[in-house]
Image 1 (tube, rainbow over the protein chains, first blue to last red):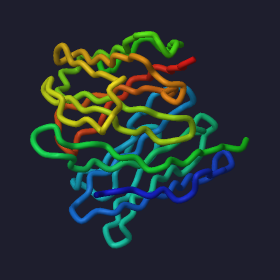
Image 2: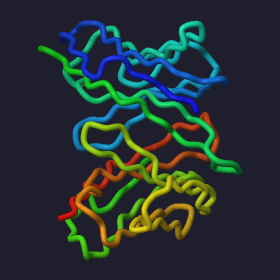
Image 3: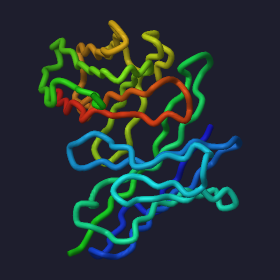
Image 4: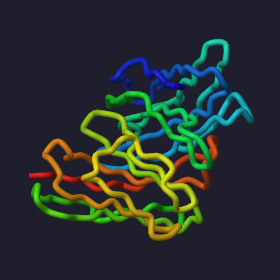
Length: 118
Length: 114
């Protein structure tokens, strides 16, 4: 089964500093990878996704991620943190489950809580 | 319309009650999902519907009963729940069953079982 591992359950950065959230994947086939953000008491919002079209993926709110096959990584970055970026971030992989049409599932890493210090 | 709408947003129910969670999307998505999320944990898959047919049941207890009346609606019927079932229940949809499709999530129903 495919999986993702997020390094660091809690990351703190100063406002204006670089944001780096780490995600490593485990997959024997080309993975389809996603980053989601979850604000308190809300659902998940898709930030960006990797589907093999380009290794550098740009998402919403100034975030981007680079797929590195040699490092099995898909780290999320943002050049300058804003207070509004404080949230929980989940890396996820889409993998086959069962058989037949519709047999895919999104499996999440354990999440990284980002705090932004003014 | 680019949203997944879940109702109610909050629900408190007793262990003998019967209630239902509702999820609706009008994006033409043909795959819909129920996830359960406990505090400080990632979402965990419960059910997947593809083209209105149940395609994945992650060994969920029978006190949770999903239903997909049409391609836009997804229900989760609850009966005889336990306090440990208290969680955020998230509905999601995607264009189809393909691996490359991102999921659109609703804002969830916060369920408390007393």
